[in-house]
Amino acid sequence: MDTKQFISAIKQIAEEKGIPEGSVLETIEAAIAAAYKRDYGKKGQIVKTKLDVDSGKLEMTQIHYVVEGVDEEGYITGPVPIKVVEEKPDPQDYEGGRDRKRRSHEEANQEDEQKSENGELKIKFNPEKHMLLEDAKNTKPKAAVGDELVTKLETKTDFGRIAAQTAKQVIIQRLREAERDAVYTEFKQREGEIVSGVVQRREGSLVFIDLGKTNGILPPIEQVMGESYRMSQRLRFIILRVEENPRGPVIVLSRAHPRVVYGLFKIEVPEIDSGTVEVRAIAREAGSRTKIAVSSKEEGIDPIGSLVGQKGVRVQTVINELGGEKIDIILWSDKPKELIANSFSPAKVLGVEVVDEERKHALVEVSDDQFSLAIGKRGQNVRLAAKLTGWKIDVRSPKEVVSSDEAEVMPEAGEDRAEAVE
Image (cartoon, rainbow, N blue to C red):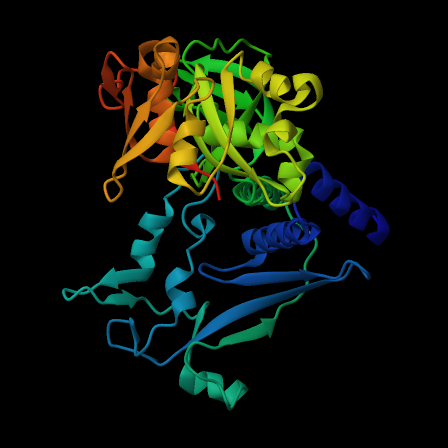
């Protein structure tokens, strides 16, 4: 393969895996170094390879870390360079071979390091990777402890079958690691965004979602009660958080979080995306009902009308995505009385009285024919109003009084959450 074909292959691999070209090139270089070390290297040797993609030439070097001295037992004395501590021994330096028992990095480390009684880390001197300061100054007069001395090696390109297999395994492993890192970085930056995914499978109460480049998980607490997640069903989710795992990134999704509603409206309503209309707070009982408070930053723009859309098309699209969940859109107000009165929509409020401003306790008065609507089924309306506003609310009619605490019963579906949206 000539240089042009090789560069083309690197670009193709990078594009298919979604990883930077530089990472693919580093992987190839690491594979060549591993193959060289397998056939021509020595135990503990640190070999680096540099490939010039323009000329196709290889340059192989050996790295030595400069250390201060060695004691009688052969352990390094003086400051131990951080890179020496972090450097992990190659398992191929020890009893390698597919048919032999390989020792782990931890076991191999026992050959190179030892901890003294006071917990101080001591590392065995290895002439293949370490160089005494006195000797280093013969080569580099200004050498200091911790420096890396680079020595050129004879370039080799004729590798045996086992070395070639070693290089292949290094490439596969490094590409997988690079691919996992690329996926983690991409989705970590998208935390809080809405994504579309296909239900792939279920394992117990966990639902696995195909997101294209990787899979996400929908844990039970983030599922909407009453929703059935069928195989190959396409739904929208919010990326709740992305966690690192030795096996790859773990992308936790949610359908029950209040920001799912916010994200769906942001997609459907250009005014929210542009910042003209602002979502100030959301209270949600997933699968049942949501209250969303909005305001406008510009005069002449109706924030409620922006979310409803012409003939209700925008809000209906969100409702359909949420499986018929009811949505109340109310006007935000910085005045507590107005906000509390608006939060009881669709019920009409006669008046709001602030009982204790410090403790945020208010009394709402409604007419007899609006009382049941203000309370809502199983107290849901007054409960969501209290969560949306952050006030403790008592509802009064000419006949009886009901507080938001008394209305606090288990919701019909989903999880009980409220969230202020900046």
